[in-house]
Length: 115
Image 1 (cartoon, rainbow, N blue to C red):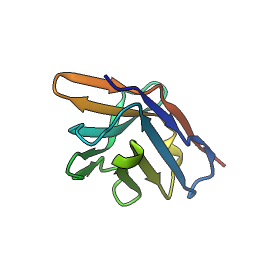
Image 2: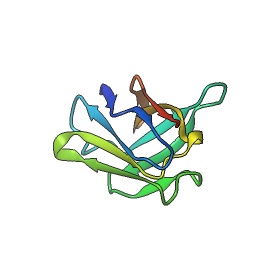
Image 3: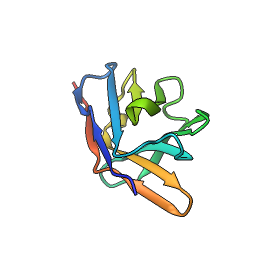
Image 4: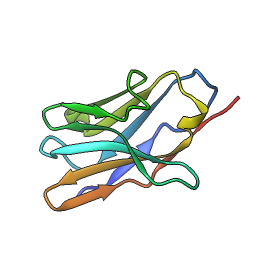
């Protein structure tokens, strides 16, 4: 089992940047896939970015070129660097970890992009 705790959310103006962190309760070295999802009010939760244990990455089309996912196994942390933020990026962002047959979620962190 692994607990995930997100941090780094907040209020930012359009065009600004934020860096989200997801701290895991144990080593993430062997976790096959970790990612970030988001859910805006009235919308379904959607994948934003994911990173595999081999550091392969994938992004939603809406964030390609603006967001970067990374992982630091020594710190047991996954990051999401978000640049050029837009109002439509406003959502609760959730960290996710996939192991064989198991899925873990964090509690979420709010990101609000507004002037």
